[in-house]
Length: 254
Ligand SMILES: NC(=O)c1ccc[n+]([C@@H]2O[C@H](COP(=O)([O-])OP(=O)(O)OC[C@H]3O[C@@H](n4cnc5c(N)ncnc54)[C@H](OP(=O)(O)O)[C@@H]3O)[C@@H](O)[C@H]2O)c1
Image (tube, rainbow, N blue to C red; front, side):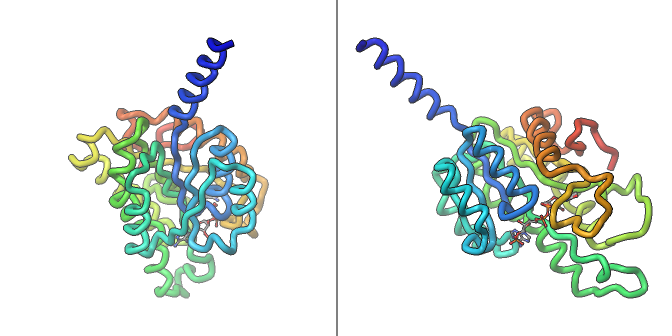
């Protein structure tokens, strides 16, 4: 009896020690929410961040359902807020950091001939400077973990080698810029020497609020997209750091 009890204690303490931690930006909806749900189901410790958690009922409900989900406030454009959260979590090792938060900036606002130039700053602040700042602030947390992965949700819309059609130049430029910024980060000595892996991943064309109003016939469900991304995130290793992958597995040209 005593032996069984000892074995159970060893089993449960090993399981607890092995739970990996993921932190996700933009966890209120869409792809970020689905990542939160799926990693929670898989038993990870999930730090789900949102700019307005009090308004995010589905996220609040998820945190009630899973005690391995904690919610933190994070607007990726608020650099002081990013630093404050990094300080609050200074003793937390983060195995996988997913820079997911992003905006398109609207469609009509980016029509050539009728461009609203004020949109550019918002798109760049959220899609490029946000992930860069979060990566800088949380590098130590990721470096202290077992898996050491920072995954950036990019887009095939950021590819210069296969531009088809003229649409959303600010959004496309932001994802090209995100790719360049993250390739740079991947080659920085502070990142390489710590063995931190920088992933650049495209989720496909996904049915979320982001693509509302677009034809659905070529879209993936958010469940499919996130399943594919989770497989790729698991595969990401040092050799793949700074490279650009579709979440279906193929390496992409820039
Ligand atoms: N859906 C697609 O087909 C597709 C394709 C390629 C790439 N992507 C990329 O995938 C990512 C997620 O897209 P999605 O489809 O899930 O979009 P979504 O449903 O519109 O969700 C966007 C998320 O980003 C958050 N967010 C926006 N601004 C933020 C800020 N300043 N700080 C923190 N969070 C902020 C939103 O929070 P609030 O709820 O507070 O607004 C929301 O949680 C984006 O980076 C997008 O570019 C999507």
